[in-house]
Amino acid sequence: MIRIIPIFLTLFFTFPILSETKWLTSLDQALLKAQEENKPVIVDLYTDWCLYCKDLENKIFPAKEVATELQKFVAVRINGDESKDVVTKFSVRGYPTILLLDKNGNFIDKITGLPNNELLVTKLQEAYIKKDIEAGLITEQKDSPDSILANYNLGLFYYRNGNFKNSSEFFLKSYKATGKEDSDKKPEALFLLGLIQIQEKKFPEAISIWNSYLEKYPENKKGSVYYCRGISYYFAGKRKEAKEDLLKAKDLSTSKDQLEKINLFLSELEI
Image (cartoon, rainbow, N blue to C red):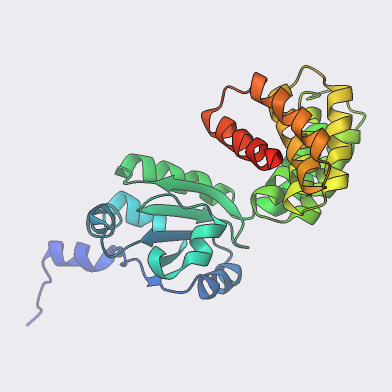
């Protein structure tokens, strides 16, 4: 006797069932897997006390349209209270936070708070296109080595990922490039180059850059430039010059946070 399998069972076994997302617990392990599989990385940063983190884990990630996109990623879930190095590196300010990284661990995007399904799907699709963003930017720079924008974009990429050596190299190339287009990126490149010198505690070099900036672009970001040169003078031990610049910055600044920092430095200079 021939037994006939009902058509609905045939359909059930014919079409693949969406597999559950497998979450790793180590970023280093996730990055190794990402390189092996040529996939970008999604990091779910949570805490035990965060209620929205539970909603993200139990409601948003399992949704069919989201889970489909997650199959293209290496997924890792990390407790923010136990991974301060990751929190600091990526400037995490709240929970949940979703980090989207390329296969080499370079930053692509960040979502803070609980996203809806549509937003998360869009962000995942955009991140997947950039799964090896560094390679794409390097290719653009090599194709147009004298491009202001190509060098700026590569410098900005390295800057955001804390690679100050490479970012300095390409910001300098962007500033010195002779191309005509995107000239507005030149002062941005020089400004960020100055910030790098401060972060690396190279204060004489920073002062030199701020001098060049004020000479080349005297009307750009005057308050911020005087502030940056002022703190560079301060840490270089040039108290008189520091006070002069910080007073100028105080007159020009409209940022409450910056004004508080200026007043703090000025109070130190009065001692």
